[in-house]
Structures are given as C-alpha cells and as structure tokens.
Image (tube, rainbow, N blue to C red; front, side, top):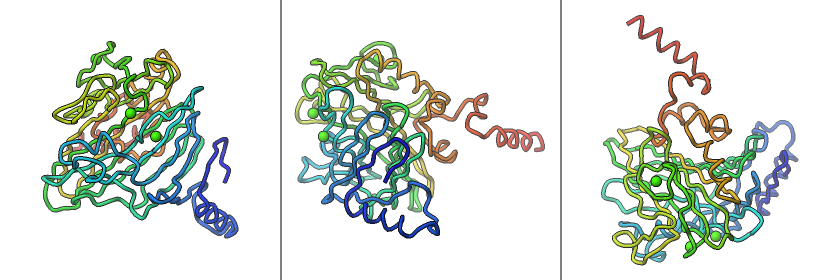
Length: 347
Ligand SMILES: [Ca+2]
Ligand SMILES: [Ca+2]
Ligand SMILES: [Ca+2]
C-alpha cells in the first residue's frame, strides 16, 4: 500500500486484507487510504514512518512503567497488565530507541483500580492524508463505565505525535475519572530537563511543556506538551523527566519517568477529551523553535496539528481551552458564532 510519500509496513494479514479491497474494486465505499489493522498483543504490531519519525510496534500490551507503578495500578507488570501504545520510536541520526513504550494511558473511575487501556477487537483504523497519519480506535474500551478511546496523529510536516484520549460516561451517575499518561524514557540515568514553557529549566505544575534531553547527546530532545493556555492542568505529576522521582509514587528513584495525572468530572452521558503532543528534535534549539506550534489552539491549527479532529472533539478537550472569539473563523465556526450572537440578541 502506497500513499503519498509515506511508507507503511503492514503485517501479512493486513496486507492480504488490503489486497482483497483492491481486488474488490471501485464499488467499495471505503475511504481512501483507510485500513483496519491488527494490534493484537501476540501480533507483530504496526510500523509507520511519518514526518521523519519511525513509530514501531504499535500494539496492545506494550505500555508498562511508569504507569503500572502508580497508586492503585498494582505493584508490578505481573499484577497490572500492560496497555496499548507505541513500543519503539526512532528519530534523527542516532537510531537508538527513544522510549520503553509511549502513548498509553491508564483510567480509573471512582474507587476502581487504575486500569490499562487496550484497543478492543485488537484493531485500529489507519488513515493517511497529506497532513499526516491517524491511528484511531475502532471500538472504545469500557473501563469501569467509561468508554475510552486513544487515537494517534503523526504529523507528516513535523516530527510530532498527537495522543488524543476520549472518555464518555456510560453510567447514570456523575463520575470522576482519573487518567494517567506518560512514558519511561530511553535516556535512563542520563535524562536531563533541558527547558520548560516558563522559560527556565525547572519544573512547575503550570509548565505547559517540558523538553527532556540526554546528557550524553545520544538521544534527541523530547518536547512533552501537557496542556494549552487556560486548559485544565494535571492534578499530579508523579514523574518529571530529569528530576528524581520516587516515593510516594514509585519505589525506586528514577530520572527517566514522565507521568501526569488528570481528573475529569463527567456527567451521565458526557464526553471529555485530553490531548497531548510529543515532538522529536535533534537539538534543544530546534525543540525551542518547534515549541511555538504549541502556543495555543490557533498555532496548533496553523501547524496542522488539529488535523482530523471534529469541532465537537476540539470543544470537549479539557486540557486545551476554547479558542479566543477572534480566532473562531480559523476553526471554521465564524458562522456558528454569528448565529449564536443573533440568537442572543433575539432573546
Ligand atoms: Ca522501546
Ligand atoms: Ca528508561
Ligand atoms: Ca518552569
């Protein structure tokens, strides 16, 4: 399967599926480039090269530490099953693996345990456009009453990954949902916090993004984008790259953990989303230049990083605030705003 200038590596089962579609011919109503692919834990996973980044072995049950060590998640990998995510990421001239899996979440509602998200039916939907490649949930996982999905968008125009989690309360009661997101970095004991959005290289809870690096210069700089201006912040950050983390969250002292925790209050039937980004850069300077894309939702839109998201999805994203009134046109809703204004005047 070829699409634009991106390379797909599909496992054999999917290759035959794709071939069957092609043989099926023009009558098929399948959207261009959309493919349902296998992400079963026992399968080979999916490999994608997009935007200069290689995302490798995307499948269920690959995300482990640090999320498996958080309170309520069980003591270790044996007691707490792994979750869906991207096992290996490669970027830049040095092709070392950047993570021990990234892009996974754990979810807890009420007094339940903090459970790993895995793709139900062991499938995701891969769609490619000029903007990038989407890897989307096909069937949400019901985690203790919360229908949960995790979608990725890999930009074709910058080395940037978007992770988009969606949470819908399927119960008849208001629920408080805890979401844990993070990764164990491949920079290990050499992890350093290089920069943060506040302009220093020190962590505060209101730093919207962090840049981590590798003191040996081997691995790229990683920009972890946590939330937008006026968006909902994490209520706890058990793991900060380059800052020693340990008790009460973790047994051992670690420099290479990134972990944020979010709390969402969901009315019956309500949906809220959380959106994070990871950007890969060869140098700290490039990371700082690249961070301008994360200034606000307008800059995200201009950088093509909201591609594929509906307005409804954008409006329900708790950690990125609604666009400023002056920028509504950028989101294609100027007409809607005018309509709302007219209604207001009529009342
Ligand atoms: Ca890995
Ligand atoms: Ca590590
Ligand atoms: Ca700071």
